[in-house]
Amino acid sequence: MMRRRSWQEQQRADGRILLSALCIFLAIMLGFPTVANLWYSFSDVSFQDLSGSGFVGLENYSAALSDPGMWDALGFSLRFAILSTVLQVVAAVLLVFVLHPILLVRPWLIAFLMLPMMVSPAMMGMMYRLILNEFIGPIPAYLDMLGLYVNFLGREHVYATLVGMEVLQWTPFAFLVLLTARQSILPEVEEAAVVDGATGTKLNLFVILPMLLPTIGIVAFIRFIDGFRVFDHIFVLTGGGPGNETTSISIYIYKLFFKQSELGEAVALSVVLLLASLVLLQAGLRLVVRSNAK
Figure 1: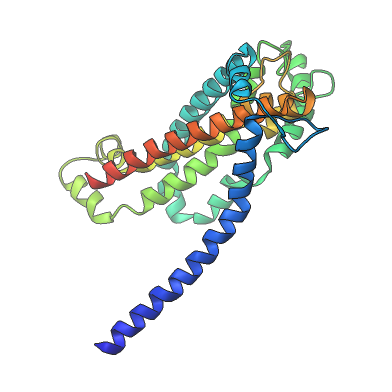
Figure 2: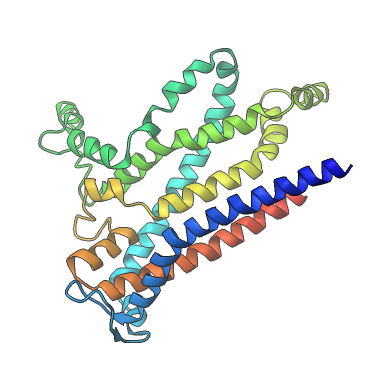
């Protein structure tokens, strides 16, 4: 008994040492930038003077939150994140129901389904910029042969184009997570449902789908956050244009920081979004804990 207790105490001591090292690493790598950003958000800082010696209080926050362009960018990010998340989750659920029996027999097909996710968002944006270009793109050229003229990057279609890109690239992620949850359902549960008369569509809607709801919620939460902070492929494909039609909040902060040299205002807006993200994350964690408790 004494040996077992001493072994457990040694394990706990080793765990404390490893955890302390991790905490120190995170404090250095994340703590210092966070503190610096907080200071810059209350300072008059520029590329000529990065010391942030001029304290301006809440002026940066007031300027950032009173800019109509910021609210337009925030609205675009919210609409983009909500729509792309809904489409990805719905498509992933349908693919799970359709492809699950096939993938049980041929699991190697999953590798092909994951290919879009393996391409970096910036490279994906560059690829679509080439194939959708109204002058040299092959897709507009083929449509023109059929008598159809579609400017995918024009004002009328650019939003749908960006949402389609997001859905095509990241639906495999949602599909993979939901497929894992689907395969973790015990066969005994399905057999019992079949004995009770739940087959085909009834089995999927009234037995499988309710069991997947917690995983669907987690996937939707992750994809919403990722969609809200989107930057790479939109910046490469449109640069936030035409005009400011596709300026997400991340692109807006980038332009504010590097092009308009409003460093303090950009950092202040970043701090506001960080706090909002923490609140949203805390709310999401509470929902997950409550669902698991039930």
